[in-house]
Image 1 (tube, each protein chain N blue to C red):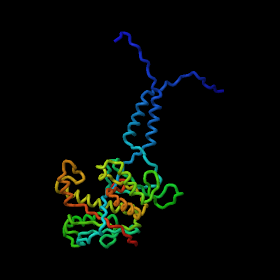
Image 2: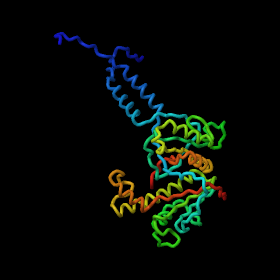
Image 3: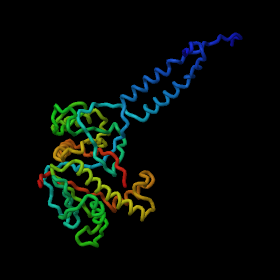
Image 4: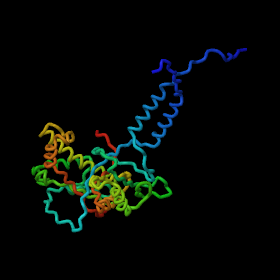
Length: 153
Length: 183
């Protein structure tokens, strides 16, 4: 009969983990620097169209966001909806929203405020045109069609 | 200083890793990494009076229409999206050679019209091609004139050069007031 080896044989030496916090802190700082806080919960799907001529938007503080797309929750149907901040909205709310957002900013910054329109690929231009008209009415004339960068072939 | 130094006991750093991991996980969960990229558009200010009759000659305007079935009509003929960039560049750099296209680049206009039923994806693609055409002709002109492409010009140092290129190829991309074309 085979005998099991009893405990008390050779023990593995303890692994030195004193450098582990350093490694983890390094990762932590990387993520702190490279990322931004997620500030809103998406209620709609925005699969972005692709474009090659996209430009980076310089200042995040000078952006207002408008989201358009079909709701993620099927209970709200499949027709594209507008989302402002955390809630569903209609096209008519946009004027008020932009005015409110701009009123929080420095007056000198307002001409530089850009509206970042994040719309799903499948959305029809009808709703986008309506949004553009609303933006023109509140004199928010800088608009950016958010698109993901396509590699040029 | 005292001659006798008290030994400072070693601080137990064993739980440091746990704390750091906790912070790391927190940041991983609450952050996003995407940088906002987008096609920049300047909307025209709204005006009360009806648009004045266009004094522009028809040949200065390159008409681009996109219908609700995402089909492209350029100057009255059907075109595929991959030919749009070249067509627009031809229009901008025509300088009066072709009698149907623009007389000079400074007068050339691109007019984009879309239907309410056009998909956003198609619209962005068309807009992208038109923007690409403008960027391309500006790059070419700048390369020929200054030996540097336009997009590489330094906005602080080469202000005059940028102004000159912009004056030569002004971005006149007009979008029609919304109408429903149907189709």
